[in-house]
Amino acid sequence: MVVCVCNAIRESEVRQAARDGAESACQAYSALGRRAKCGQCVPFAREIIAQERAAA
Image 1 (tube, rainbow, N blue to C red):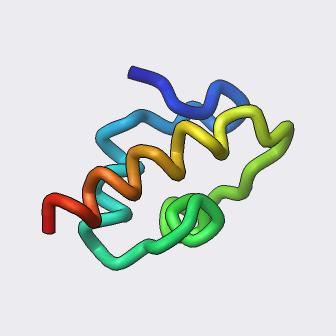
Image 2: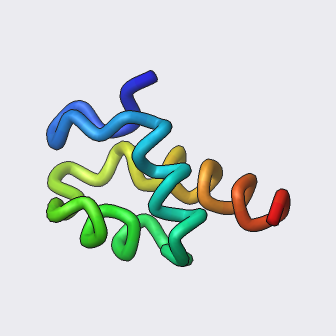
């Protein structure tokens, strides 16, 4: 599933960034060499990161 259309970031990429230590959407995007543009994806990215952190 695509999380960020502007940057073509997939859910699996956000999950991996969270597993690698990203604690926020900005950190996850930065780890992927990108940054949020319009921002509509940030709440969904936060939710994914929270899920990964809870599962750890």
